[in-house]
Length: 367
Image (tube, rainbow, N blue to C red; front, side, top):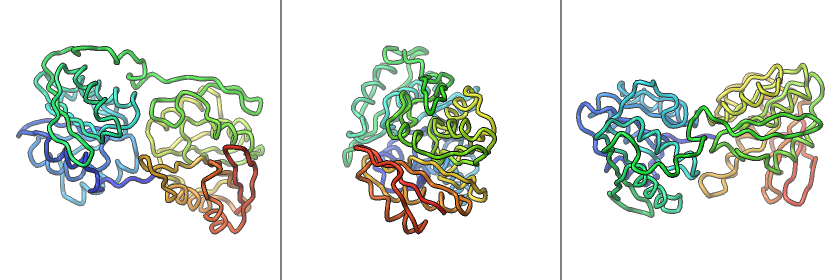
């Protein structure tokens, strides 16, 4: 999925930019903000060191590019969730969080902020009310023992807390093992007679169970011995791992824009003993756009926030055509109601329905 690192229309990012207090010499850690260029640039002019993390590789690359073009030199941008990718000796005066929608990823970010802040440091979080900002404020208060709403606007709010003690005021809600980035959820699947364990992290699509769409595509996709396969938007790596087991000797590449998905898919493939597998961070198929494959399998995302966004699957379809060998096969699973047929027919010149179920369809095309 593509992201726009300097998207100006996010009121939460604007609230963070206006209300985050930074003084000369501060070390600042920004986590999970996709519209960060303005706030990062502003704080870079005051702080001695600014560190930014985001789990979406497109956001990371876009922000790095924008900062380079702006001539900002004291900002480091890391790909990963929360403080997981940061040097272990980092101690911050200020931490900011653009609230994610998912509960466990948010709780990890809050815990990370508490842990990385020095005593006397401040945490600022912002998000929309319909994204869980009120609940996030309660969690912030529970962790830090204090929280204050600094501003509201356009259904968004920014909340601040100070770290006054070395340990959380109330550790309730911090007992999930998945708040530790080294811990994976594990669940077993059996697909096409192949049994293996899926490893996944919160925030990855269908992170704690096998979803019906993936299971449907797994049972329909045709992968022959020796086929080279691209799992486009791999998530936890279910389809790519199964493809490797079916192909046996063929090259299999899994790509995703989410660094937690990359870690998950890597763990899934390795634990299954799948051979010839490479897992890459990629904005759609950018990382493999010069490679060619016999098969592309995909369950493309179709949401931006809560809204349906057909530009995303359209990009997946175009990239799938680009990387397929002549005669190569696309298998795409989608909700029955999503109108992908026209985009596939326009790009490939053909389309067939490989599966037509009550909830999901699998569309196939040949390059």
